[in-house]
Image (cartoon, rainbow, N blue to C red; front, side, top):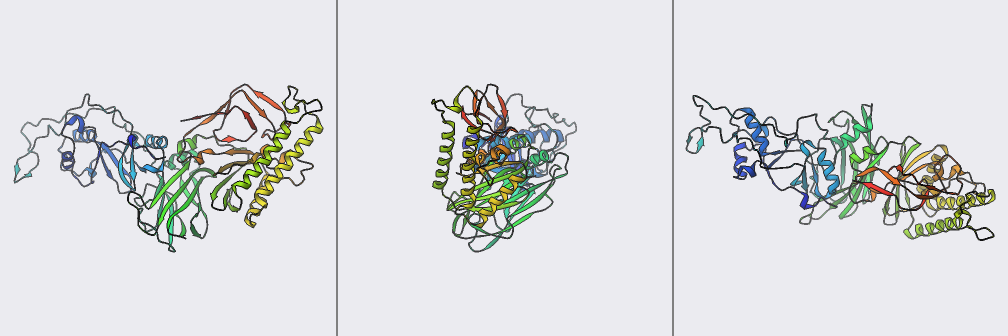
Length: 557
């Protein structure tokens, strides 16, 4: 959802950096108690923005000891550091506040169609204890034919009052990393529709925000520095899902990004795309840093025709974690990371697997088929959990947790048959050779080493923990159950319409756990156990077991 209009500060004016301080003062409120806290905003050459309160301009004037009213505001020394702008529709208020707090002075410019419409600020503004107005004490020279001749210098000049420290002004401190991931179409203005059957170069780099950027993912500097550790640079992988476009050439490229603050990327990557049809076309980019999946950006792009009034030709929506939340997630070292991104399409699902390389496949399956597989899997689990002995006692719901070896073996065989069936239907059913190759790849990776599998799926619920990639379900090997051998994480933040800010914990208490396919090092034994202690877990819902009750409490900010 967009940043709510009621949260946007409208107490500001837009100026040109060439306008003089005196010209700007004339535009402000006459009442100084109001004027002092009005914001002045202008653009910098690198596409960012200077946001200053008039009180801060007064402090610069007081410190200079001169009449600065004839000075262009862009030439003043001591202005606040530049901040970035974000589109109102690109994120929710939680992510916007997080981005604001990372900016100098906790000020963020809010845009609509690339044009500033307001600010997001975090300051307590009062009219108490204002220092003397330096402009009121500057003597003025004679005015001839309406032209000010500059200040007259009296024989006994009165000193300007010293600048009074203001706790509300942003404190000077270390520079802020304001780099963003820039995305732009070469030679195309952000609000210009593309044309059908014409190739365009879609470019990505990391640096200060470009004026022609159709999207700018902020906070990348903080994220890169956190991921880099002792390294001098990190690798940003951009994987393109062309959607309604035709992609010519490679579908994934790497941006080399220095970890040093505000250093631009070593390179710019380029994808060549061509629209297939007129109207609204979609395009996705998936971002990984050092193999860590953190965001997906979807563009809706107008092709042909005119842009309807009140809309823009290119709109971007980011899903995933905010940068601060992404860096707060623990970096697991248990297994090779494999990211599985599943995007819903008209006739099936596009699967993109990243794990040292990028592979993709189209699964020609319907939601009804998936529902049928889930019904079958639930039936198998239900039959096992409700298994009774000759006296009608439920074997897996009894206080005695000892399971006879023959019952355990029989249950494990049923699970293996279900897991193998699901694996075969998913990758070897009605889909094409690319899907079968994907199944072979995942099977090979799974058998060779332990994996840390991150699942991002659009409208695709699937029991990944139950998958079995062995060849002989009659003699199942517990280590070939995905939920036993691997760490599987579901990433619900990619299902949110905007970036999500999560605290990195889940509190789990008083929970019954059926260890059907566990991720522990012991053999799955189909027993129950009660966990009375609260357990700290990752916010991404790991499929280490099937939790029957209650629902874990997810802490979010």
